[in-house]
Image (cartoon, rainbow, N blue to C red; front, side, top):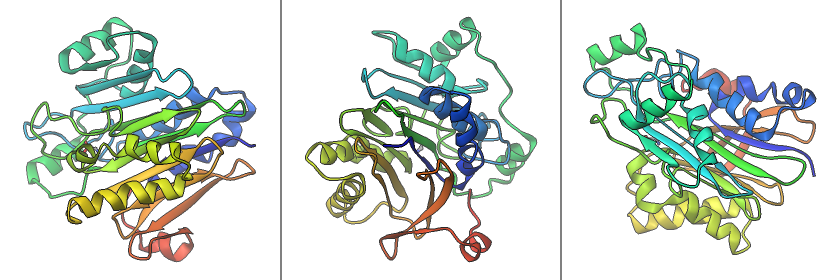
Length: 297
Ligand code: GLY
């Protein structure tokens, strides 16, 4: 079975399309996941992740990230960190300890500085302008990447700046194991994007993994987890999307949105931009017409 990768949103396509090259020069699964996420974290044009992310209600950018190794089930996460250039690298480094795997706020920043992770002032002029104008922006798009290498090892990484105008200290689903991400190489991996509070109420990543554990494939498990939860909460959540990859290498995606773009690596290791059409409950490949009409990241 070939190498597998799946990631959220069109914004991840740029680096996913370099996966073939990264594989040729023998990047590990962790390095590929980190590279795809860092590419989005470092891009100031994406206002929901990393540098250029939109700030909290006090004008400060607070970032969340998580990483999980599906072989050992080790996880690492940081939440509400300020001025750390690549939160995903800090999160993945925290998988190494037996304890202290999720660090938050000042403690996480202290750890990052002590361990030589790069710092950067994360608020860009453009993000500050939006903050001052209080422009209402749909900004809860987490970059998530799940992968499976040729040995069957799986891993997942996620990174976000969370909700625009959130309360300082607010933590969403992304750095919370079981809600924003989960991965077990024997079963599969899942990651979520959307309104964190809605995702956490349903612990949607572990819920989806558990459906795969019962024998559903990645697509069936995403649908079962999301639709069962939506029924329970009277279809109230407006923005939840899931991606999944099962241990057999099947991809899955599901969303409450009319259009949820995600990226997969095909059998030739080429990146393909796909779209889950929420109104029609089906997946199509993005074509020129769709790309011309799509305004999001
Ligand atoms: N899903 C990202 C957040 O709500 O913070």
